[in-house]
Length: 54
Image 1 (spheres, rainbow, N blue to C red):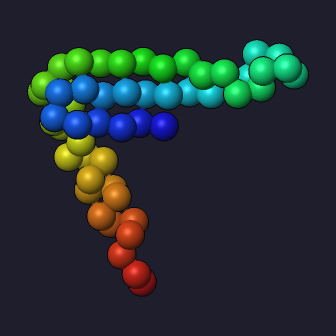
Image 2: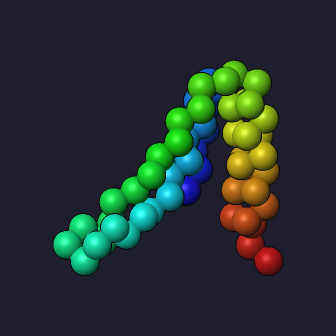
């Protein structure tokens, strides 16, 4: 999973560690305005193209 705003990007990856806690996760948080802006633009482009009806 990836989310972005104008300053931050967060990447989340589920990591099952054992049967008792199968949904723990690893999260990477990147605070960089230029990277966040370009990532958000790319995500919005994918979102907009995937939400169009055929």
